[in-house]
Image (cartoon, rainbow, N blue to C red):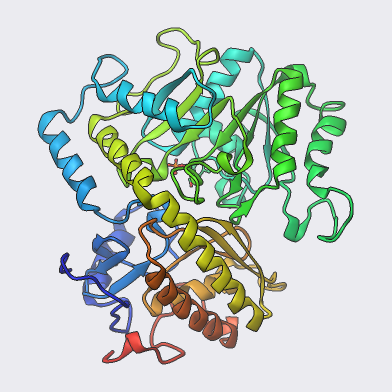
Length: 476
Ligand SMILES: Cc1ncc(COP(=O)(O)O)c(C=O)c1O
């Protein structure tokens, strides 16, 4: 990839996978864990901004950002230079045992900008799941209670504690025995498909169904409030289908927690760091968590997680929790630069380009009855398709078929939830690039709707595009 050239469209040569990609995929297939999920054969070689080049020279427009991670775009020059500078000075020390300036520098910046009431404290980790593990342990330690409440379709990670919360797909739990932690799940409100049966036009406030369920059912039966350590919630359900929570629901949870001495843990691993058009999704709601979890976008691709809590809560003794790699200096330097870039314009870009995209996607919906909902905040957007009854396997669902058709046209997207296409592009995406992505998406929806699921079997059915596309000109 010529890193000085700005592309204006994807450049694609079919068929996929190309010869180099095929070799790498064969080696991957032989040596990598079979638990990895791949929807299509993207074999990345280099990336810059919103463009990814594969090993065969195809150029893709990235609207997934490595699953909502590359907030500042791929290899942002200022991030690269911050990483290089820091790696020449100090790569590792172990923040659990030694001091270095970057630790309090990033923690104090988070104290300034994050929705956890100041004074706060921070524990650094290397991933989202570890940030959630830390939050769970901290809540148990502080409250001396052991029960938790979480929500169906949520995703909080795959290690044993966070897996007890995660409930987005059976495959994530199958074979792993009983939950490590005592977690009770409650339906997450979704105005589009109300789990409590309310119609969108209902005069009553259906969003309070989950709050009512907790107060009047769980607390009176299986989860006595004085045994409940924390309620764990995503403000925008991520893997569950990109569903922004209703305000009354979140503020209702805050009220319940305050009433019963329960901690409110907000997991912003996916929705944080400008993704929703504000620095944190909590900011859309005026929500103040007791504990906040961050990861993904915080360090523009370097592994960093954050468990942040009110000072009074993060009151455990030395040795209670820490990690060798958590708060690695290079990741911290990248995070400080990431926040600078977010504050310098990327958060507002996320809001503005997000509004444009939601409007454009709603326009597409008007011509496609198969799209049942377009929703989101900033550049965290979900396009839900009508349930495909009678198509139990995930590969044949419309959302899956759409992202494969998009891939063949050079647009990188992933699915979330049952049948939703998720948009989580780098926050540097311009309006012009968004318009290109929307055009390709419209063609992909058209092509996927026309192709019968039976003609799209399980793995990578990629030969020739069902619909001619300018980006395929010159394809062999
Ligand atoms: C909301 C949320 N929490 C936690 C996690 C787990 O993060 P990681 O994969 O870094 O362990 C994810 C990952 O997708 C997530 O979306």
